[in-house]
Length: 372
Ligand code: SF4
Figure 1: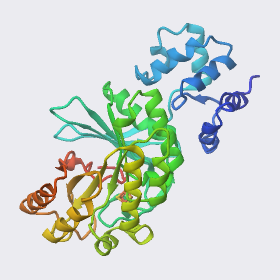
Figure 2: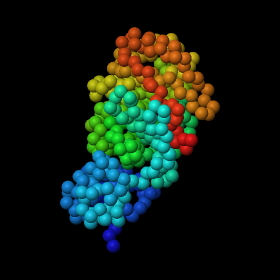
Figure 3: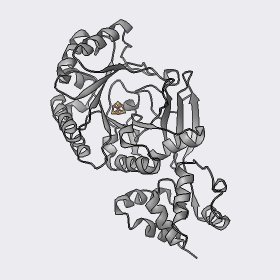
Figure 4: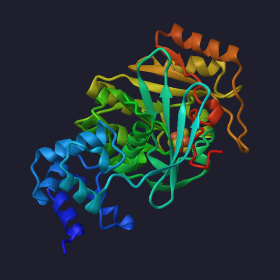
């Protein structure tokens, strides 16, 4: 009898950079090989082990990542014997949709269940006047960073997501809607830089399997300074968004515990390194909390902070979340005043649309609870 686990090892042993993700799969051990998350090179290895021609790997890859196949019977251009072997020895995905919600503005939110029964959320945002379809993905189940305004931060960390579990969020959206995701933002649950290696591997898979250009992939961090230096040196460098949320260390440390470890001045130095090294602009995310971070003084300080930084700023009016969080939504006129002061400093300023707020899919509202 053939030993599939041995086969699986054979498949990955030539790709040592990816072997870690297979190793971590052990808690979910199965005799069958999961295809989702295997890139073309690994599918070619699998076909070689099975004594099949190399081009079969391209066919399977196309069904998995372009045509969003849900089962092997859909793979009609693959010979019947190989489809039967695939059914016997492999499976496409072990991720299921536990719940799906549709917002009045067309935003879709999915609660996905992984093989160990943990859940994570992902969101598809549609923008009426643009062809872009943006998937907001989670990088961890829960988050350890404890930002005071964030629903996920109230829950603590449960575990990191594997590269294929991140990729699966986009694939699930594509399989369910039949639409092609064009942009990906790592702005769901978790701090991506606390799951750095898996995040980078997921980015490689998103780029190579789903053909989403690196310029269309954005990673948002609360400011894990050493990892900003690391990502600046990668061969694939995504766009960086920084959850700044306060213009000075005193206020920032009141709402973001990360400030005590990596302060705002060190963060700025790291951002300068990133922009100089990559030539890319960073986006500063700034949550406007009523009467706390939305004041004229904060706007002036933020304008000063941005002065010598290659950046845009995205203002996010605070979304109230369920539970005992003490923060308030800002007044609309304060949002406009804040925007005006920053624009006067010559930076591009956007105010984030509150997409999906009626289904708790807006920024800081994802938290892996059963979203009902
Ligand atoms: S804002 Fe981001 S980093 Fe902060 S607790 Fe929430 S998920 Fe974690």
